Image 1 (cartoon, rainbow, N blue to C red):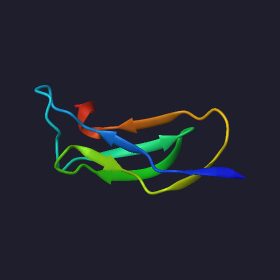
Image 2 (cartoon, rainbow, N blue to C red; image 1 turned 180 degrees about the vertical axis):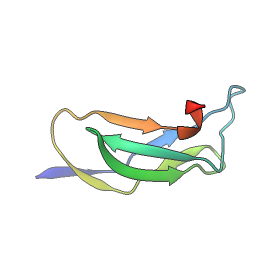
Image 3 (tube, rainbow, N blue to C red; image 1 turned 90 degrees about the horizontal axis):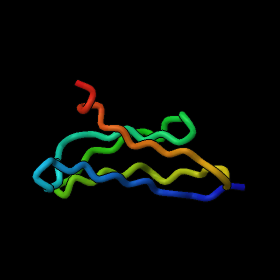
Amino acid sequence: MGDTITVTATLVAEGGGGVSGEYIDFTVNSDSLGSGDTDLQGQATSQSWTIVAGDNDFLARFPGSEG
């Protein structure tokens, strides 16, 4: 049995404001949780997922940062 979670990340510009209209890729233990678009506050949220209880490695990645 696992726990149901919702993962949220915030994309912030150097000046401190949220960045809207971008997407964030979410992974847990190298498995994709999908992606979410950032809103006006820069927040992106993945869908709720059920994961195995215990140690899990989460990553929220902004692909635009790879250039």
